[in-house]
Amino acid sequence: MKNALTINLEDWFQASSFEGVIKYGEWRNCESRIEFTTQRLFAILSERGVKATFFVLGWTAKKFPDLVKEIKIWGNEIASFGYAHKPIYRQTKEKFYKDVERSINILAEITGEKISGYRAPNFSLMEETLWAYESLVDLGLRYDSSVFPVRNNSYGYPEAPRFPYLIETKKGGQLLEIPLTTYPIMDKNIPIAGGGYLRLYPYWFIKKGIKKVNSQGKAAIIYLRSWELDPSPPKVKVKFFNKFRHYANLDLMENKVKRLLKDFEFSPIREVFNISDRSG
Image (cartoon, rainbow, N blue to C red; front, side, top):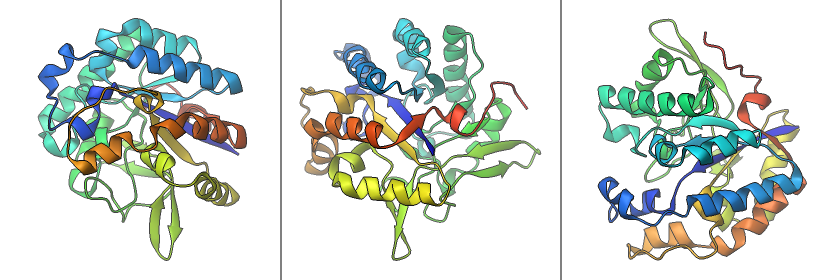
C-alpha cells in the first residue's frame, strides 16, 4: 500500500505558534534555517529512496527559488501552501483568491509545471470556510489536502469524511479533497497524520493507526513541517501551550520519521491518487 508523504515547507518563524509575537512583516529580519532543515530532510528521504509532496509558501519560494528547484530535481511534487501562511478564516474571499493565485504563479514560474495541489495553513479549510473551494477550482487546482476531520481548538472539520472525496462547486467544477489521516476510537477521530502528533504520541500508536487504515484499502496521508527536523531551533518566548506545541519532543522527530519510512511505503500525492498536471 502506497501512502502519501507531505511536507509543509515552513521556516521556524512562520510556525503558527509564533504568529502572535513574530509578525508577517518581520519575517525578512529573521534568520532563515529552511535550507538547512530541507537538506536534512533530503538526506532522510534519499536514504530510503522516498519522494514526497512539498507544500511550499509563495513567500519562501520567492526568496529561495533555487531551493524549490532542488526539491523538484530530487523528484518531489511541488504544491501550494498559499503565499503568506495566513489561515483562510482570516481572509476575505478576494484576498484568499489573490493569496493562492500569487503562490501558484510563483511556483509555476520556478518549476515550469502547472501546480495541481493546495494545502491551507493551519488546516483552516473548515465548515465555515468551505467557500474557499470555489477559488481553488477557479484557479485550476486538481486537489486540496487541508481538511483535518478532528475537533481541535484552532482547526478541524470533524463532520468531514475521513477518506478522499470529490467536491463539486456551484459552477460545476470538481476538486478532490484528500483529508489528513485519523484513527477512530469510540466514535471520535484521533489525529495520527504526523506533525506534532507524531512527536507526542508513542510510535506504536501511529504505526497501529496507519496499519488499520491500510488494512481497509486506504492510503494514509502523513505530514511533517520542515522545522521539526531542526535539532537546535531558535528559542522564542511564547505562552506555555504554544511553547509546548512547537518544541515538545523535537529531538525525537528524526528517528520517528526514519521509522515511518522503514515501516511503510510512501510517495507524493500525485502518484498515490494518480493526479495529472493537466487542467480539467
